Image (cartoon, rainbow, N blue to C red):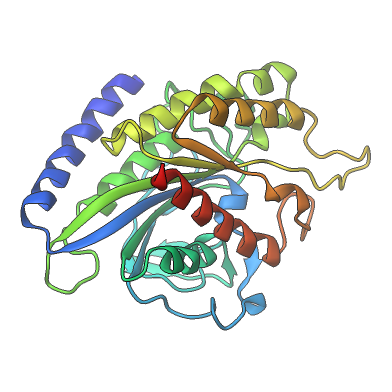
Length: 306
């Protein structure tokens, strides 16, 4: 299926749902999409959370799409619930029930900082990410890719799972369960990804800018907002490998990320990742994820003030 056809199909579902919400809505809820690979999944440990984050967040809701490999169906299915710890790696959906893990990602500190920046505002997070995934199909390995032109065997990949996540999440008119229809306001895309595109060849890394721009443009279009704020996390390297570097072409992907935010007036980048400590070769420690969520919120806030 071409990306143009995919775009038309999803817009045919989403645009009417937004229009209906605008006519009948009682609650206004800012909606953010959280996507990417494993450092968006989140490898922080719930046991490391301070009391201010180790709780259920009032007026913050999350739809966490079920993560599956390319070619598999049922990716992106999920259920709205109030945000709490457990939406990191190993989160799963079992029999239409969210199964929380002992890990967290950026969502908790992102929510806390948003509540400080936007008092008395309700928030909704739509999360679909998958560890190891690339944008370029040539770098997908066994993990999968977000390539919108993916053919494969049945044509289903991570971009399709994103579309399913979005469609399923936005098909609910009352996500907070208070009996009132909700006005869902698309408010931003958070993207933490690029390491896998930096791991294979120089050509793949050099193509990252074009792939990132195209993917973000299409994600914005699926939210029916061409100028929707986008914040990306700058990839970093633990230098925990036999030759010192984990991502051979990391600098090229970093350059592409900087180029993207420089050439897009509604995009920003979080650079504090360069200072984070790691819990293994690939993933930040708990403190890193807490800081990353706060930095994403601050970047969104500044973009929306422009």
